[in-house]
Image (cartoon, rainbow, N blue to C red; front, side, top):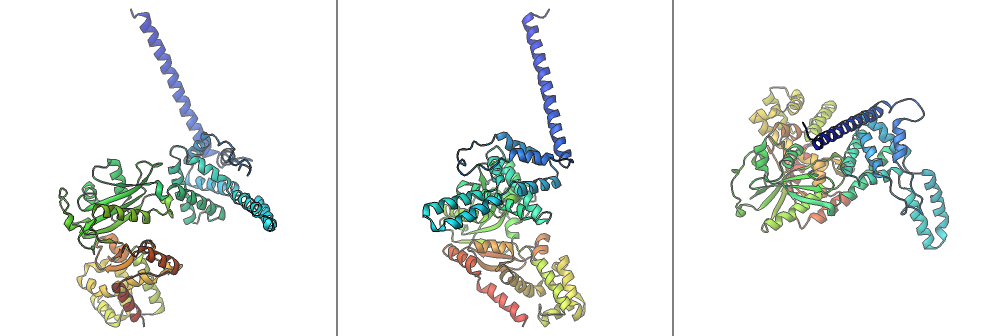
Length: 503
């Protein structure tokens, strides 16, 4: 016979288990119902949709100017509810929700117009009155949804949610799915907030080593956008002897690298990527300080699409330079070994344009003759043959073609980097990045990336942007203000050859 105390305990445990089971079932049904409402009621007919109802509830009215610092914050559940609701939507529904949010919960334009009129009237009054009206006008320009974004940032996982939210907005804008002024204003507001939250003082510089958490190493491998990591041995080498890997992290996104920089420690400035990512010293080798005179930045990858336009990469390079100078006081050379994305596609477009216009000035007559001989075509068909070879990458299989095309492709690439502009700045995004940082366009390298990706993107050419530390500030200012590109004799000589070939 079971003693009464034990029987009572068993009955209590059974009741507890049953209650917990009922509670879990209720929670599951509630979650299912919520998802059903989110997915089915979003487009339901009637005066109020699920989207409108939740936005009206979670986007609070902007407090009056007088009560702006006294109004209590909305409950945290509002932010959590909005985050759950948004995540439950399909891509098209997210776009619709963001459109409603930006259009219906933005700036009170009537109030702004009224205050603008008052500001004009008060220009003849005392300075204190003018400043107060200006402050009121500034406050009235705050979109209602900005409060919601601020409150979301304060809940757990909220900042990461907003980073991903902006990535969705950027995708909507770039796809032309919605290019309205309202959605662009929402993007600008969110970018401004993220720039504040991810300012330099709030970022943590972390060196990634083989002893770093496995999850971090895996993310570093996945995020590598320039030279893909092949396996675990590959990543071990990239964080091993004569290599450094650094990342910026943020307290609100623990374990999530924001931007990653890979560095090779060498004696001289590298002129090809194969010597860095394919030819390694042994994994257990000990670094010889005397062999380290140069830091080559060979890969920098931003990991969060939602942080596009938030300056992280240039700050990371400057912080890493200081870190390396502290570790190697004698280090004297800092340079990138950069890819040239877009060169091949630009070149193919240029060849197509010259074909339509009947021009043949991209190559000299002797060069066209050699191309015709190697490809076994007539001089009139050499341009079409070259276009096919560049598009397929097959020219790299012919040693003679590699020799024949070196001179014309190098000068064309130099012009692409130096002469092709967008709004006065370098068209190539990697060039624009390093030139904004104050680097010098130092050297173009032939046959520097022989991987299929390197050949397809830039005909295998890479470029060194060298950082002369004493000149970076003046170089950056000259580029940003006057669009001046600092370049070496090698680069300028190639550009002059390009111009001469077109005369």
